[in-house]
Length: 232
Ligand code: LAC
View (cartoon, rainbow, N blue to C red):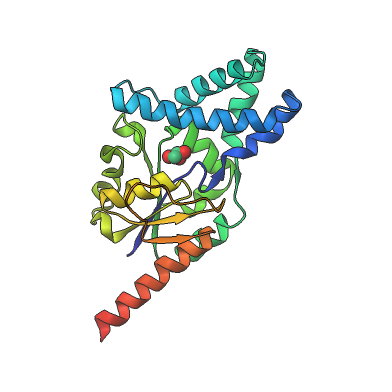
C-alpha cells in the first residue's frame, strides 16, 4: 500500500471543537448544540443521498445548525449562525494528526483526503489547521453529488489515484465510514477515538486503533511486510 486516504471531519479535525464558541454564545447548551448539530448534519447527508436531493455539505451543515438551534429552543440570529459556521473553517486538528501524516509523507506514502465536505469547507479548514502541507490530493463528495456511504463517493479514490481500492488505506474515525469504505473494497482502518462499540453492520474494518499514529503504524508495517515477502 503506497497511498492513504483520510476522512476529514471527525478524523483529522475535531468537529466538537465548535463547543467552546457554542458555549460562549449559548451558556449551558454548547455541548448539546454541538452534538445535535453533528448528528443532524450526518442524518441530512444520508437522507439527501438516499432520495437524490443533493446540496453541498456546507448547505447541509447550515441546515443542520438551524434545526439544532430550533430543537433546543435557542435564538436563530444570523450573526450567531455565521459565527458558528465560521468555526467550521478553523476546526482544531487532533494532536496525533500532524505527526502521523508527517511520518507517512517521509515514508513516501501518497496522502489524500476523501470527504463529504465541498471545497468551500475543505480548503479553509485544511489551510487554517496547517494540514494542507501533508496532503497531496483533496477529493470531495461534491464531485459526484452524493455523500458517504454512497459507492459513488468511495469510487473517487481508485479513479484518481489509479490503483485498486484494496491498495489504498482508507482511514476514518467515523466507524460507519470505515465500514462503508471496507464494503467498497478499500483496506480500511477505524480510528476509534471515543472507544465506541463497532457498528453492527456485518463488516469489520481491516484495522482498528485509537489514534492516527496507529493507522500510520498499520500502513507502514503492512507495506514492510509485503516488501519483505516480495523480496523473499
Ligand atoms: C466527512 C464527514 C464524514 O468529512 O464528516 O466526510
